[in-house]
Length: 583
Picture 1 (cartoon, rainbow, N blue to C red):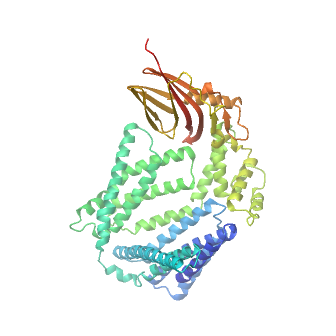
Picture 2: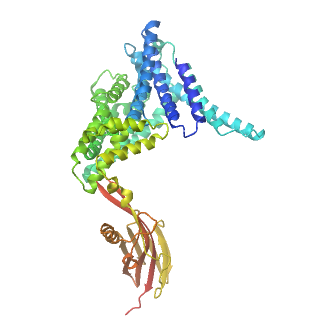
Picture 3: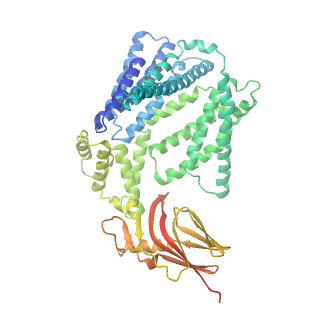
């Protein structure tokens, strides 16, 4: 069965290469079929391993295979990832759960921890070998094809190379991997060999790398404790990455963790979970910061689930004397399955959370609230469809959604989803333009950008803030100009004296003029305006010079950072200098 699925998937991938981009429906259907082939491949492999290890007869084994095929067929018919992002997440979760099942399905009823480790070591090394062979074979064949194409002037299409990579990377790779799966799992329990290369990789590469990451995270935890501020969102990814590779390291060194001569390995395995405790506290704070502001979404649900799972694993290995490593993939698989379907699933909880947020914001019209409402509506429609907003309108959203789906052969999924979002805004009386950061960003220039009056000035320096630093001689002195990263401040130094030109005041006046509709717009342009030249000038006295920053044009790019709106500036200007005679 796995062989047949591999061949079907390879043929499908080659078919996809030949399809033009405007065949939206067929392309999406074939991509979904490929994903279900991956899930079916792993589930059938897990089912066969379970059946063979436990002596299940051929009839029951065939029924188990049939049930898996029916399940995958149902998934193909029910799930529509091109129109619902939630369905794409479900497919990803099914892939993870199916591959986790392969790791422990042969050891559900019986089997020692050593047999479990030896089996997964074999799979790991076989997969690594398959990747290496695949890379060498595909690159070698591509070079051979390139040579033949040029030497014999065959004028072969570029798609021939794509077919090579698909046939080798999907077909050969999968079949080579399957050929290396142990036939008799029970024999593995008696094996005690440990690959030297695996030990060297884990002991001298993976564990030292994990130790460096741990040091960085612990120092960052000390920093936020001293400054008493909530951690940044990036720290969540770092902790999850550290935990993942740390647990992988522990699994790889499991048989030799307590053997003599492996002191570094022994120390790491003994203290890893203790070191996870402060990192888990940091992770909880980072999650609280995100969820408290924006509610639950699928990625945040997964982050919370991972935090709970890591906490469970850490507690288990700190207090348990058995130290059964089978608990790691089994517990993670259960967490993944719980996230797919039911009232506790990621999709039910995320949808409920965002609908509750939208209800709380329903009567608000300020800019920040409108921005939040538009982002929530976009999220709900993209992930759960128009029907998720049924409680906010009397219109039959299922009928409207079905109308859009009937145009599937004529329009891309991207177009259909955007039309559904626009429909949702209309039905809920939300004006997305009021929250559009693009509309709040603008470009302003003086009426005559090409003309600069220099009468009475000694020096003129043309600059823009793509030049972050400028050095220039002026008479017996030297001038240094440095622009901050956000473009809102400009330091000018002459000798030992310096002055800071801040553009915030100019931008504040321009914003006020835009709000009062007194800013003349350029003809034929969107958010492009004119502003008087005399109001775009900043002057200062630096050492023996009068210095004027004369702005020619500036682009204000507004964006949101957490719950506040920030902005960055890109500008062009002339810097004019005049030597002042001593009194």
